[in-house]
Length: 59
Image (cartoon, helix red, strand yellow):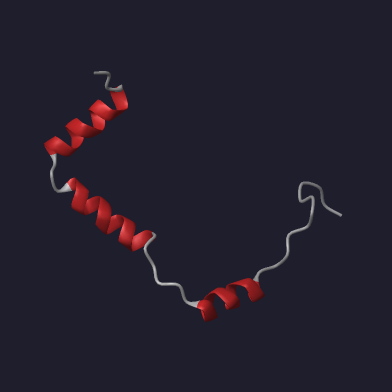
């Protein structure tokens, strides 16, 4: 059965350090798994400056 080099690398990595999965989940929770706050999202949207259609040249 074929196994890519990347799959083999990941499998061996997780075998070497079994705590890596827990670290990976903790890092994901820290950066991505956040509760959505609608008031804060609206504040970010309202405070943003609209980008010009073509930003590479000045006026």
